[in-house]
Length: 110
Length: 117
Image: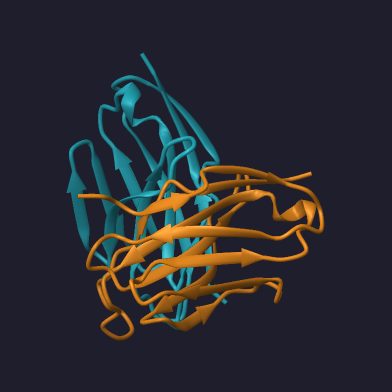
């Protein structure tokens, strides 16, 4: 059964203090790893999809990387508006579902 | 362009009642998925529908049912509500699945917050 574990559960950063969020996964043949951002009271917002070990994608201050066992979401010089819960998910073997981790709650203070 | 729209945004029910949640996908999206998100947890897959047919079902009891209409909108029904059904119910739409591993990305709505008392 697919398993997705995210760490840390919560992270507090000062504005400008770079860090990384971790997503460890166990699947039988990766069919896509997804990163979403979720603001309080809203639905998840798509950030990235990664398919192969070694793949990297960037968007503004965010960079996602993928290995055979985990993915990292690197946040460079974060701003308070980056505060949100970041969710990692893998596509199920059937292809119809995303299996999500519990998320990392990020707070960036001025 | 309108995103995925869900209604109602909030509702309160009592144990044993029934609830219907509604979802309109992004124009051109033919696949709709439903997820349940309990506070502090990640979303959990309930159903996926494509062209009015159920394509996948998560580990939820038969009290949960859904359907998709010819205009691709969808309804999620939950019968005999339990306290544990209190959650944010998310609808997501996507372009047609092009087989396993297709690059279809889920776009989520803002959700329907259900509270069961």
